[in-house]
Image (cartoon, rainbow, N blue to C red; front, side):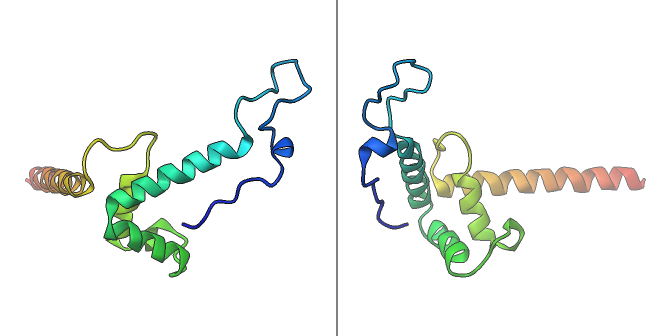
Length: 119
């Protein structure tokens, strides 16, 4: 992710006070601030994934991968870790371990269920 450009004229962005005193259209922050906040949050989450996050960025930006189904498994893990409304309170390696553990448990349940259904 690269350098962020601020709007050249803060009056056009709505960042400064406007003549409108009606209140409903008035914002206490610039329209671009939300995008800047989201970009910073995504960058922070990607940084937490380390090499997997860098791999994800490479696949999307340079590798030409446009569909989740075609991402490498490590990139899928990084993307899944980064998604959601809040940051994970668990480190990326521990989260991956927990996800693998859940996958093994659920596949064991499926196998046990299939065996019971065969008898």
